[in-house]
Amino acid sequence: MNSMTYTRHIKPRIEEALDDTPVVLVHGPRQCGKTTLVKQIGDLRGYTYMSFDDDNLVSAARTDPIGFVDRLGDKVILDEIQRVPELFTSIKHAVDKHRVAGRFLLTGSANILLLPKLSDSLAGRMEAIQLHTLSRYEIEAKGEALLPHLFKNELAFGLLDKLNDTLAEYIVEGGFPEPLQRSSAKRKQQWHQNYINTLIQRDIREMAQIANLNELPKLLELTALQSAQLLNLSNISKSFQLSRQTITSYFTLLQHIFLVDELPAWHNNKGKRLIKTPKVHLCDTGLAAAVLKLTSEQLYDEDRTMLGHLLESFVYNELKRQASWYEKEVSFYHYRDKDQYEVDIVMEQYGGGTVGIEVKASATVKEQDFKGLKRLQDTVGKHWKAGIIFFDGEYPLSFGNKLHALPISALWSWGV
Image (cartoon, helix red, strand yellow):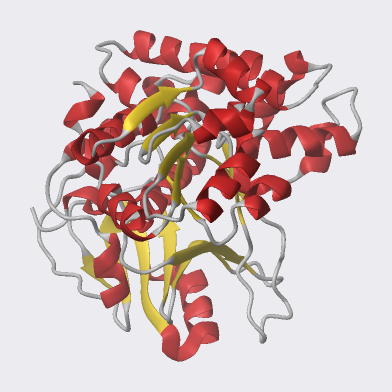
């Protein structure tokens, strides 16, 4: 299956931004489908396409950034813009001289918003939209996305798919378009391994002068081992002959290229006894499994603890993807207090409304599994919308008072 086949649900958001904003940046991990998507949009709107994967183009743009931008047409796609950061000031001047909506459509495989000078230069002129790897909802292309129903607490009840070992297969596949087209698990894993090597040898080498590039795969592996757990960089740094400060800067680089995501702790004014440490997730579970050299069979039959952690990352990533095209902005957190009550994922929508999420790899749910959600519900009060335990069952179940257990498959096949 070609990535052109997938419907990317964030596309209307990009088109809306082009209608009223001079510069639109679509950024996300390399190979997640950015170029395919912006070319689709650009072909319909008459854009010229240029890619900075071409080293000659990079050289010309770096040598004369002002002249390069001045010679561009009124509608241009600049692909992999992070390779030529010198262009941002010239783009700013071009926009200020001739401000029209949708003039520049940029893509980037590094998060330039984390580089203050670059993001400041286009403040008020640019909208940044993150494209993630494919959601399972986009891959399956059936039913409805679940996220809007959670915030409305509109949860109808009918039979859904129990996934069993297919769940581990979905986790190990991940959401990058290209490996999804490969027929064997071995070939998919090979793609992920090559991807990591290329990123480290090329993108990170270009972004930072790092003497110990060979340490990065090990850092990524140790981070993957901490998936869905509290981030402990001190523990990670003990495995290296490097300072904690160096490891922290390397970890930040992994965030810059969209490999790693920090999930902050939820807090409010009443939460004086809350744990404030963030959790860590890899941005694609296919990459996490490849880094850990785990097959779906190993994950399902032998390593149930890691299955639980990667399943939590899988659900978190799915919800983040669905939130990226949802009509309201959604913020993501986790909840943990000093009495050991915890909730895996907390979602808050702009304008009010909180949903708590727990994730279980098992097929059974008990009343006591809701204790963390009930604690959070009491703390949130009137803004509470729903508390959900995702489990590997067939039937959505109500546990009363805006608390539910839902099959994991409900995330992408609601209403089928």
